[in-house]
Image (cartoon, rainbow, N blue to C red):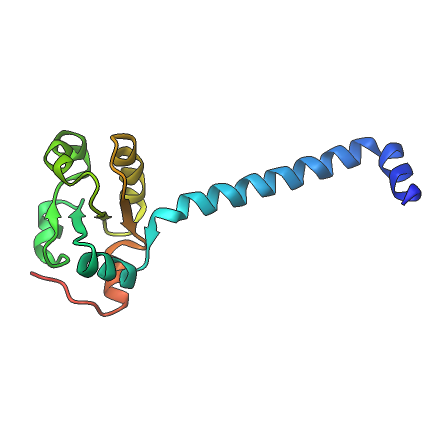
Length: 140
């Protein structure tokens, strides 16, 4: 043990760099863990819809929405979400699942709604691409 301490003291720059890298890795892992807490797999979305009356909000443009969407989904553009979330405020404590094509836009919108006071906001991990990959039904 004393040799280890002697090594750390003798090579303090190397030791500091190693500690810094370890802290950066830990920070990144925690950031990824907390960022993915709101992302749900398609089966989890179905459970929320069926058992907790989850509301699905599709953030895609109307043409994409008409070409296929999850049954019962509302179509609100991402840019209109902050304006129209007043209509969603009556459901502030109900699960809201945001959906886009790939999952990237909906994950950003989750943060926006959470900042507005919504308590249960999620996004479909992988977007509708993940939904289609599981061969789940879409309404046209």
